[in-house]
Picture 1 (cartoon, rainbow, N blue to C red):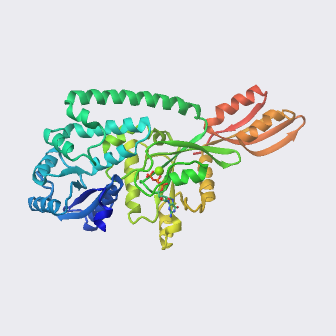
Picture 2 (picture 1 turned 60 degrees about the vertical axis):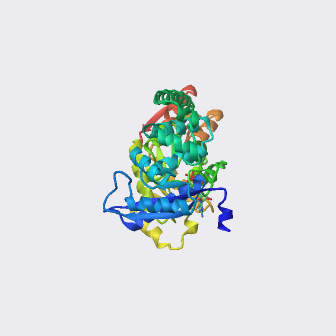
Picture 3 (picture 1 turned 180 degrees about the vertical axis):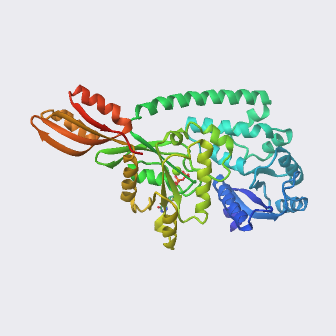
Length: 433
Ligand SMILES: Nc1nc2c(ncn2[C@@H]2O[C@H](COP(=O)(O)OP(=O)(O)OP(=O)(O)O)[C@@H](O)[C@H]2O)c(=O)[nH]1
Ligand SMILES: [Mg+2]
């Protein structure tokens, strides 16, 4: 039965190491995640191997005895792919391939492969190809090329046979071509971004599969692809979200993070991730039901640090509360993380609370402006109603004195509007935070 179901998939084994200083439980959880990644890439994991060792073996990563055991398992169970949880050196890959005579890939290689399969747009494809070539370059040996041709499938997609066969110089040329192409795409993005600089930009960040896209969809009626798999989203989608009748933000959803996200990927996804770097506020979405939810939060924080975006105002959005059986966890998280909201994007629980908290955060960057305007200028008054939050209105003779709040990005726009309407600005208070 199992044999039949697994027929189509590549048969794989995953391998992890417990060295001194790592807890075994943690290493087990890493292997769980690696198994999920393998599944996402289209492989079926038949064996999980966890070796306890004082230190990494420089030649084989794991001990020689385990290597022999792996070769035997691969023969017995017709396994074609061995996936290691840590990054392997090019020499380790070569040695392992010679001994086991199967395709060997590491976590980064697997993640890159998933990205390659999932990339749909021109930009995402270009970014993934760049990251793959940079990953491939130091690993480009005759042995690798030979085996990748022999096996195909996971870990060998992407740059394509032609590039692999050509020499390093060609790859360098291709890398610089891709970089130029990405610069061009990023300039186009910049122009689009300038057009919407007057609204507050909020970016969804978080570990992969926590519900970022589901949240964007419910907040904005968008139709972003949602799936219970890793890395469903590789592209950025931005939508307007109304927080109240006269306060809107731009909300962007983008690629999720994961433990040991290859550096090349972060670097080449720079333009996609620029929404995060340029955001005024970050919504850090967390899957509160995940057993490693706090470790995932740390991964997100350190990835943000790497991108230079860790100091931004952040709202913790603990998602999937509909699945939570132990409510005490919420109380504990509430004590430790602030500001925080607890929601279910899927069931639509507390979305209003999220909007209110976010509105409160955006108001910290608001100007308070008092101005007077001719009472009969209905047109300007109606435009203003859509643009600003009016907190007070007093009628005096033939003018109306308005006190209003406006986000700092729209302040110049308001000033121009008031000038051309012949209004008089009586007082301006700058944002407090
Ligand atoms: N039970 C429950 N499931 C949710 C909730 N929000 C999202 N999900 C599910 O979680 C899975 C992942 O959701 P996505 O919105 O694709 O997650 P993401 O963070 O965008 O994931 P990537 O784009 O892959 O990084 C889907 O199966 C969703 O239906 C929630 O509040 N409760
Ligand atoms: Mg998504």
